[in-house]
Amino acid sequence: MTYPEYAYICKTLGDPTRIKIFDMLKEGKQCACEILEKFDITQPTLSYHMKMLTQSGLITAQKEGKWIYYSINQEVLKEFIDFLTSAKTE
Image (cartoon, rainbow, N blue to C red; front, side, top):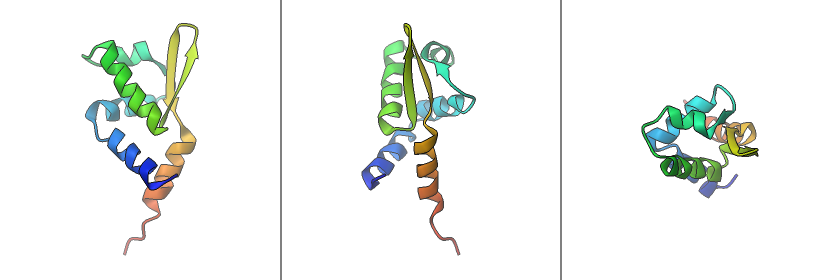
């Protein structure tokens, strides 16, 4: 990953709604309709947040019939965690 990609992930996770969505997806794949039920937002607003999360690479979207299911992209998450934890502490 590049520095701009790391920065985009940080920017994406800088929003409380997106952090909550990410936290929800730690439980596993979820449909957009299931995610929307947990918020007091409109569907277009959810779509905007999901677009940010998928563009960051942290979340993947998979269309199944008329539904879109979202899940955490484990490879990108691992690379991001490795980047964050590679700092030496003394």
